[in-house]
Image 1 (cartoon, one colour):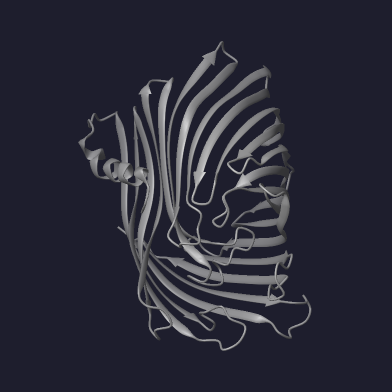
Image 2 (cartoon, rainbow, N blue to C red):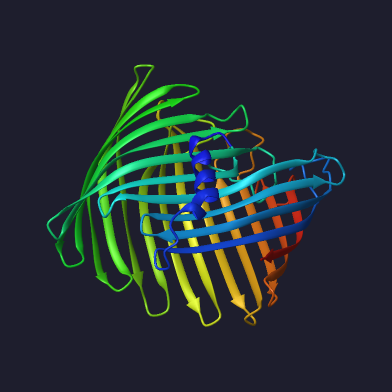
Length: 412
């Protein structure tokens, strides 16, 4: 792992036991775990022709740690991931999965320091996530570490202002990945004008140095949030971004984030539209415009979720739209008993073709069943089928992948 915050978190995780242990001062939860799995994959190299099958054995020891005290909140989850490819299509490999966040309160209710670190394997194509298709094709390990000291100013009883600094270090294991180091200063304000109605505004400045270029960015915005009923609210903000690159290219873009969530008697609906600068492993800066909707229904022993989205990815420096994606998804979960659970998800994607070899359509189906024993042992089976197509209702020239999993997870 290649970030300064990784070392900080190792100190926090290994050294939290040295903190004072007053009975009412800290709440600690440490849970070791071990996961072992076996996968059969009928297209391990994710190719259209000359498919190769493979058996993959994985061993994933890890732990979760939660520590809550007056001056420190820490929430961490980590596992080591060892992978053995029985037929030798790829050499033995290992990676890590880390998600950790800590908040230090240096001056109560005023001066805080937030640290976070994540390490995981990600797809290199920001628009086409292929982590369901393969364990390694077109992917890289990614490490993002963040350190952010900030102040919370309370103005009267209805207003708060948050000012601070954030340093972010983004690293990729693959040489094609674009490493980034960002210095970010910000001021965000919120004022409750009426009960449940908030006005928000803010400004930020960032200086980013990447492995391919440098740029500065100014953001200014204003907005509101109105909570008009229990679990129902509407929000919106609009602003402008001014971005200057070391090539002397200057860009000005409007951005927004607006939406609503409403709880109906049988379903909760969420609609949102936003413009954001997403993390792109292969580029220094990319602007994503998203329109999305989601409908969720809680059942007596499960849940149903239907969602859809449309995204455009624009290369910021050139203004060229690089990728477009339409996604539809349905997800269902059901508890047959308290111990036996089923899950089923169906996902359809429509992509623009950047090269003649790109498949414009992708259909994914995932089915799983798990059983929880009383001693912290969970056994699960799952199956994933993915088909990439040139025409949605035609099978000629398809690229298909079938993945079968059996897994045991033991918490101690």
